[in-house]
Amino acid sequence: MGKTPGRASQKSNGRGTRKRSAARLAAVQALYQIDQTGAEPNIVVREFIQFRMGCSFETGDDVLPDTGLFQAIVGGVYADRAQIDQIISRSLAKNWKFDRLQTILRAILRAGVLEINLKESVPARVIISEYVDVAYAFYGGQEPGMINGVLDSVARSIRPDEFRCGDMGT
Image (cartoon, rainbow, N blue to C red):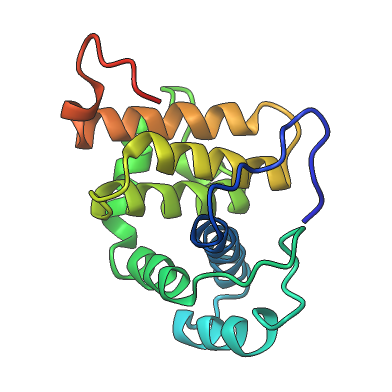
Protein backbone atom coordinates (compact mmCIF):
# COMPACT_ATOMS: atom_id res chain seq x y z
CA MET A 1 0.00 0.00 0.00
CA GLY A 2 1.21 3.48 -0.68
CA LYS A 3 2.00 6.01 1.97
CA THR A 4 -0.72 8.53 2.77
CA PRO A 5 0.23 12.20 2.47
CA GLY A 6 0.08 14.03 5.77
CA ARG A 7 0.49 10.88 7.83
CA ALA A 8 3.90 10.10 9.26
CA SER A 9 5.32 6.83 8.07
CA GLN A 10 4.90 4.06 10.57
CA LYS A 11 7.33 4.22 13.43
CA SER A 12 9.75 1.36 13.62
CA ASN A 13 11.23 0.42 16.93
CA GLY A 14 12.34 -2.97 15.73
CA ARG A 15 11.91 -5.52 13.01
CA GLY A 16 9.40 -7.49 15.10
CA THR A 17 7.16 -4.44 15.42
CA ARG A 18 7.21 -3.92 11.66
CA LYS A 19 6.45 -7.61 11.08
CA ARG A 20 3.43 -7.37 13.40
CA SER A 21 2.25 -4.20 11.67
CA ALA A 22 2.54 -5.93 8.30
CA ALA A 23 0.63 -8.93 9.70
CA ARG A 24 -2.21 -6.65 10.80
CA LEU A 25 -2.41 -5.08 7.35
CA ALA A 26 -2.38 -8.51 5.68
CA ALA A 27 -5.06 -9.77 8.08
CA VAL A 28 -7.33 -6.86 7.21
CA GLN A 29 -6.80 -7.57 3.51
CA ALA A 30 -7.60 -11.26 4.04
CA LEU A 31 -10.72 -10.44 6.08
CA TYR A 32 -11.84 -8.11 3.30
CA GLN A 33 -11.31 -10.85 0.69
CA ILE A 34 -13.25 -13.37 2.78
CA ASP A 35 -16.18 -10.97 3.17
CA GLN A 36 -16.19 -10.02 -0.51
CA THR A 37 -15.89 -13.53 -1.92
CA GLY A 38 -17.38 -15.76 0.77
CA ALA A 39 -14.25 -17.91 0.63
CA GLU A 40 -13.35 -20.17 3.54
CA PRO A 41 -10.99 -18.39 5.94
CA ASN A 42 -8.51 -21.29 6.08
CA ILE A 43 -8.21 -21.27 2.27
CA VAL A 44 -7.63 -17.50 2.17
CA VAL A 45 -5.04 -17.73 4.97
CA ARG A 46 -3.19 -20.50 3.12
CA GLU A 47 -3.25 -18.54 -0.16
CA PHE A 48 -1.97 -15.37 1.54
CA ILE A 49 0.89 -17.22 3.18
CA GLN A 50 1.77 -19.16 0.05
CA PHE A 51 1.39 -16.46 -2.60
CA ARG A 52 1.19 -13.00 -1.05
CA MET A 53 3.60 -13.12 1.85
CA GLY A 54 6.61 -13.94 -0.22
CA CYS A 55 9.58 -11.67 -0.73
CA SER A 56 7.47 -9.06 -2.51
CA PHE A 57 4.60 -8.55 -0.04
CA GLU A 58 3.44 -4.96 -0.54
CA THR A 59 3.84 -3.26 2.82
CA GLY A 60 5.67 -0.26 1.46
CA ASP A 61 8.99 -1.42 2.84
CA ASP A 62 9.10 -5.14 1.97
CA VAL A 63 8.75 -6.38 5.55
CA LEU A 64 7.51 -9.95 5.73
CA PRO A 65 4.46 -10.19 8.01
CA ASP A 66 4.44 -12.23 11.21
CA THR A 67 2.49 -15.22 9.87
CA GLY A 68 1.55 -16.44 13.35
CA LEU A 69 -0.13 -13.16 14.22
CA PHE A 70 -1.73 -13.01 10.77
CA GLN A 71 -3.25 -16.47 11.22
CA ALA A 72 -4.36 -15.71 14.79
CA ILE A 73 -6.17 -12.54 13.72
CA VAL A 74 -7.97 -14.04 10.72
CA GLY A 75 -8.83 -17.29 12.50
CA GLY A 76 -9.86 -15.50 15.69
CA VAL A 77 -12.15 -13.08 13.91
CA TYR A 78 -13.95 -15.91 12.19
CA ALA A 79 -14.15 -18.05 15.32
CA ASP A 80 -15.77 -15.20 17.30
CA ARG A 81 -17.27 -13.09 14.51
CA ALA A 82 -20.79 -12.88 15.94
CA GLN A 83 -19.54 -11.67 19.32
CA ILE A 84 -17.06 -9.25 17.73
CA ASP A 85 -19.77 -7.80 15.48
CA GLN A 86 -22.03 -7.24 18.52
CA ILE A 87 -19.22 -5.42 20.33
CA ILE A 88 -18.67 -3.19 17.30
CA SER A 89 -22.41 -2.55 16.89
CA ARG A 90 -22.69 -1.39 20.52
CA SER A 91 -19.78 1.00 20.02
CA LEU A 92 -21.00 2.68 16.84
CA ALA A 93 -22.70 6.07 16.93
CA LYS A 94 -26.46 5.74 17.36
CA ASN A 95 -27.17 6.72 13.76
CA TRP A 96 -24.84 4.03 12.37
CA LYS A 97 -25.74 0.43 11.76
CA PHE A 98 -23.09 -2.27 11.45
CA ASP A 99 -24.44 -3.30 8.04
CA ARG A 100 -23.84 0.24 6.72
CA LEU A 101 -20.09 -0.01 7.29
CA GLN A 102 -17.91 -0.50 4.25
CA THR A 103 -16.36 -3.96 4.07
CA ILE A 104 -12.84 -2.67 4.72
CA LEU A 105 -14.01 -0.70 7.78
CA ARG A 106 -15.65 -3.85 9.15
CA ALA A 107 -12.44 -5.80 8.56
CA ILE A 108 -10.30 -3.21 10.37
CA LEU A 109 -12.71 -2.99 13.30
CA ARG A 110 -13.07 -6.75 13.61
CA ALA A 111 -9.32 -7.27 13.73
CA GLY A 112 -8.86 -4.43 16.21
CA VAL A 113 -11.63 -5.67 18.52
CA LEU A 114 -10.23 -9.19 18.43
CA GLU A 115 -6.81 -7.97 19.54
CA ILE A 116 -8.18 -5.67 22.22
CA ASN A 117 -10.26 -8.53 23.55
CA LEU A 118 -7.56 -11.22 23.45
CA LYS A 119 -4.08 -9.66 23.37
CA GLU A 120 -3.81 -8.37 26.93
CA SER A 121 -0.02 -8.36 26.65
CA VAL A 122 -0.28 -5.54 24.10
CA PRO A 123 -1.52 -2.19 25.48
CA ALA A 124 -4.90 -1.20 24.04
CA ARG A 125 -3.52 2.17 22.92
CA VAL A 126 -0.89 0.38 20.84
CA ILE A 127 -3.53 -1.80 19.19
CA ILE A 128 -5.71 1.23 18.48
CA SER A 129 -2.77 3.11 16.97
CA GLU A 130 -1.84 0.14 14.79
CA TYR A 131 -5.34 -0.14 13.34
CA VAL A 132 -5.62 3.62 12.82
CA ASP A 133 -2.40 3.28 10.79
CA VAL A 134 -3.99 0.42 8.83
CA ALA A 135 -7.00 2.65 8.15
CA TYR A 136 -4.66 5.32 6.74
CA ALA A 137 -3.39 2.72 4.26
CA PHE A 138 -6.90 2.67 2.76
CA TYR A 139 -8.43 6.06 3.58
CA GLY A 140 -7.42 9.70 3.63
CA GLY A 141 -10.66 11.13 5.03
CA GLN A 142 -12.50 10.77 8.31
CA GLU A 143 -12.49 6.96 8.41
CA PRO A 144 -9.27 6.62 10.47
CA GLY A 145 -10.85 8.92 13.08
CA MET A 146 -13.92 6.71 13.15
CA ILE A 147 -11.72 3.63 13.62
CA ASN A 148 -9.96 5.43 16.48
CA GLY A 149 -13.25 6.39 18.14
CA VAL A 150 -14.86 2.95 17.92
CA LEU A 151 -11.75 1.05 19.04
CA ASP A 152 -11.20 3.53 21.89
CA SER A 153 -14.78 2.97 23.06
CA VAL A 154 -14.34 -0.80 22.86
CA ALA A 155 -11.01 -0.68 24.71
CA ARG A 156 -12.44 1.49 27.49
CA SER A 157 -15.26 -1.00 28.05
CA ILE A 158 -13.10 -4.15 27.81
CA ARG A 159 -9.97 -2.80 29.54
CA PRO A 160 -11.12 0.02 31.83
CA ASP A 161 -8.02 -0.23 34.04
CA GLU A 162 -5.87 0.97 31.15
CA PHE A 163 -7.90 4.19 30.94
CA ARG A 164 -8.18 5.36 34.55
CA CYS A 165 -8.37 9.08 35.27
CA GLY A 166 -4.94 10.61 35.37
CA ASP A 167 -3.41 7.89 33.19
CA MET A 168 -1.61 9.92 30.56
CA GLY A 169 0.11 6.97 28.84
CA THR A 170 0.15 6.76 25.08
